[in-house]
Image (cartoon, rainbow, N blue to C red; front, side, top):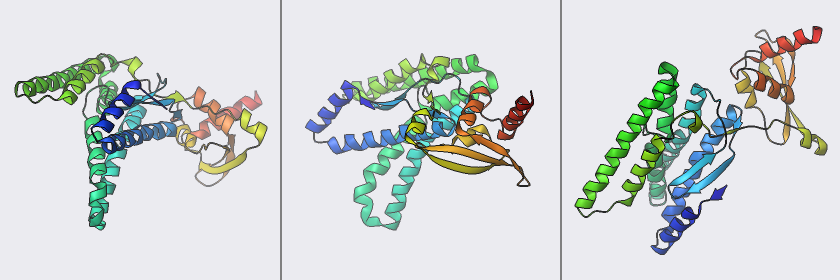
Length: 285
């Protein structure tokens, strides 16, 4: 994780004007948002490369150019959903313990605000990514990209128009200006290259074996997908899967290295039993 110089500058300004707690709260919520993306991606076999703290929040950085559209929707929606659940949790605290309202009010509103903003269907926000992926499934990637670019430019124009209207009323709103420009620039980032957010997880256990590593053994149904099986991997432990059929008959074993090989060669949605069958066939040839 690293902080952009402008992030530090904005933090200094908030400190001078006596609003540092608000700035730190928004930063924590933004980090929570990005970590939710990272955890969702890890369930699919991808990992966060780094988080960069920016003046307008936090962004993820990495390289993923072959993620499926359905998987991209899952990863994109995880961030706002996490913020919504956090806001709901604070509201529940108010209901159960009214005295906590003074301490949780700001946290709930900031979580709700970040979730709401990111659900706007404009690129490069999460809502825009979800819309682009959903349209790509039905209409194709190029047509979906053109539609999303148009929608994003409309949102950008509306925000910039609001900024101009406020200026005529002598109500300067830099947040509207920055957000409008942010969406305007983001509209032209929509496309295949913009679907890069995570790097593939490193399944290698070579270094761990030199130190010694604990084995994690999990029994799974043969219908379990490779994507689901990836979720059993834990840092510092070596995964071994015992595979069974519907009648609990033993089918075979697949190690973490074998799982990584299967994941690299095949579709993440394919079943483990199919990989075991291929292994068995290759053994006789």
